[in-house]
Image 1 (cartoon, rainbow, N blue to C red):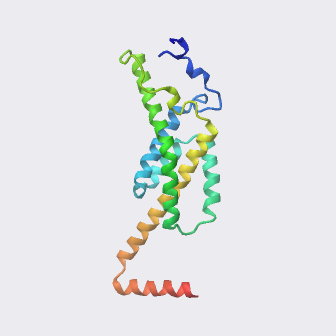
Image 2: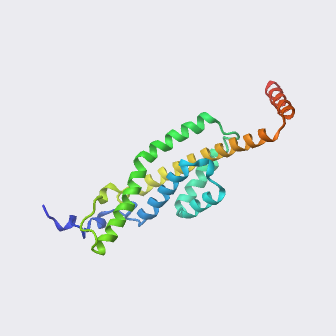
Image 3: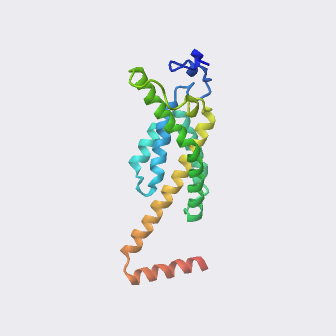
Length: 190
């Protein structure tokens, strides 16, 4: 079947509803956001304020508002970040990225192959548009991205807290460290 609707000069893109990522013209933008999140999650201990600010600036207004709301409600319940919860967040984010990241990478690949096609360097694409973020529901995709960002925030804060504790511990001499530990134990007893 050689239907013109599904050829290389496809009109398939026109079938994306306005509520989809492609229909709202955010597919490439969200693909880039997801890939940046994926990279930052590989090395959370290296994520500084500049990287977080750059990522935040990439987000559209609707996602910024949603993220602020989620972070405010989440931060009220936490004063200290703990290892088991950081581990749970890591597993959750890995699970989300297992299905979301390939869609983002496929869209980038599809977009670059399409650009090559327009210059007649490549005859056909190896990635189908259906294998990308293009037809994904915008609300559900934004919710997944927001969850990734909230989890990444927790993991990064946990990593920074651990680094600060290590720095603090390494700056004490042995007697100061012992005195600090005794004070901590006494505060738990009282």
